[in-house]
Length: 237
View 1 (cartoon, helix red, strand yellow):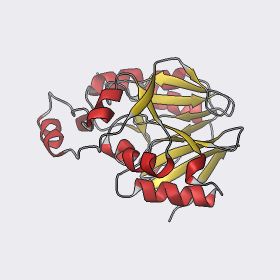
View 2: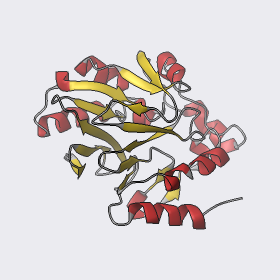
View 3: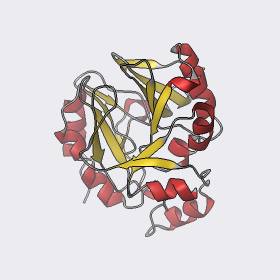
């Protein structure tokens, strides 16, 4: 089973499917607790997170909170189980909270036939209580400061996060990096693909040293420059 990958001091990528097909993240808090970002699939995510906690020398009750980038099953499908295992509260963007509470993920692209068909077969979420919400621009009290970047389009409340003390950016599903090839998130998995591409520009404006993807390995060398180059050269009409 893949082990946690250190991204910076006190920041780890946790593979919840494969070695980097789907990733969650952990932040070390000053009091020794952890904040998790995303929980993976209902099947694999909680098991992988439990193994990661053990590898980091932490107990389940040391998880302080769970943040969710968005309410798709590969990122939030394991949320209810992780809450039951750790007792940690969930926080998500205000526009994403009701999907979690109802166990109903956002629909895929309504104007695309494949998107509509996939929406019919999209796995449901196990309903989970959302204790708090956040909004664009907030600086969350996470490991010295985690900035919320609302990047809607993949889902209405999709968010990326910038850890300002270490310069680690979590892109969420705004951008993928499968096999070290950066790409847009697949259009048929988006609520609004055009909006998803447009709001990804925010990732070029932020200041960071490491770009960490929820799908694919991280970028460490010239991360911001490489993301900006992709956004500049791959703009679609």
